[in-house]
Image 1 (cartoon, rainbow, N blue to C red):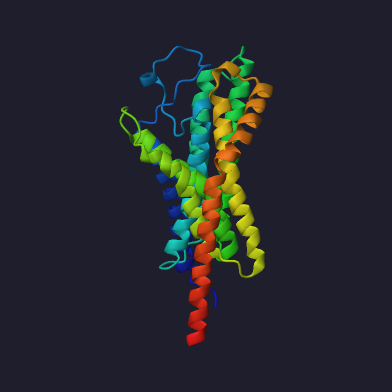
Image 2: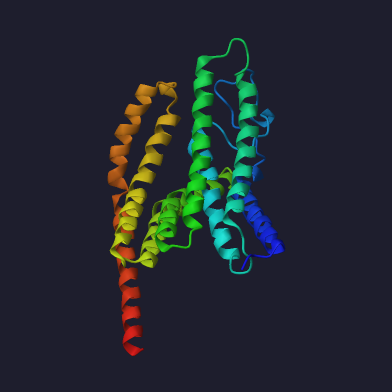
Length: 302
């Protein structure tokens, strides 16, 4: 039986609203700071921090990962919103994805239009370093927006495996978003010491719980386990190495030197982040065992 046109329209509008609101909500901590564009090393004119223009994203080489997280997490939150509201209304996933894409497109276009103007990208004597800087950050933002769409479609699915994989892939960015939100909204006196614990252990807890809920039956779900644990291990190491390379002013945009720094720090960081991966594996195994025992007893008593 075909759905009623009014019901379809409600589902489309609900999905659009969920996507738009979710992406905007994830940007809210940055917007609450006043949304002043961070100072730019290659800005054409000398400007005080309070005189910088408004920007919907904190574009700057020191905040590149923060921009990526602000975009990526919007897709995951929107997918969770769709899953929640499906219980009361037929929220359309595709329209929610469009809502997320609209917010991200507006934020990227507005921000990089401001950055291009301040860097003089369209001027007759543009600094080639400014072009490289602008292109690199713009490419990174667009890539993060595409990843947000990918994780949205994983988490919004009804099958256990893609949902589990999408949530596991979102664990590190979501925890990073929490830390960034607290950082942006905290007084200048500094961050609570507990924040470092959140950034280290919350992703492991999320992945462990997700894997425990996913289970190992059928056995092909072990692929989800491997991919999820690999993401938990690699993503924070990659974040750490890329952040370190971008924040080293002495490198001054030397791509070869930056890649060497990323490689060196990445290999060291892998050792540091191995322990949370083992914790997630143990937690997932324990929860899986508990669920299997409960099911076995339920079937035995049935």
